[in-house]
Image 1: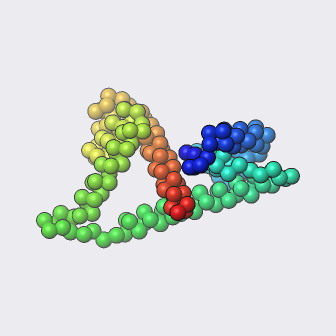
Image 2: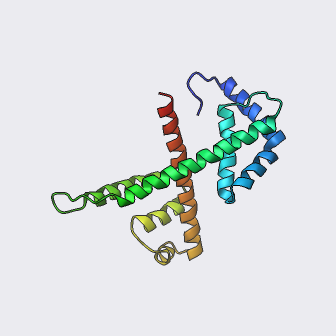
Image 3: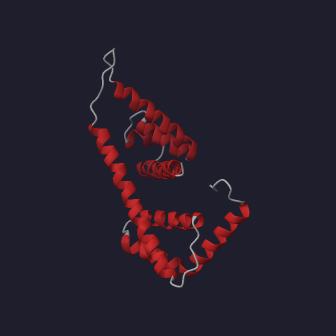
Length: 189
């Protein structure tokens, strides 16, 4: 999304300048990323994020463009690893958090978890296909196993796994972009 005060012409110019850099150095960028990241899907995500970061901050005219790109890629990879480490740290802390009991003896953490799960599932239903959303809902809201979902949806087990995998991957990307936008808005204050 364009920053306030950025005109459409400036944004188009930034995209064109970045596209020119990627036409000339795209193979180099991909090779550097792949040399550092073994997981192909993560490498593709970093490649795309790197392109977007160059659109937001177009590269300066430097004599050694490959050197500039190499340093920028290494920094982006380090940032991605840092984000994953922070996310895992938060998840570990969340998992270790003691449960609280309400007045009726119902665990408040169970209620909060159910609310959070329902909110996440609602978002997933908006960003994936109907069948993918159905598979994820049956799995995580209803608690069905893969065989039960396959029977309910009248598809084979592999299709159920693919529905869930694709839906969760899209959700992770969606929440990652939302989290990054949130971080950017905090940093700009």
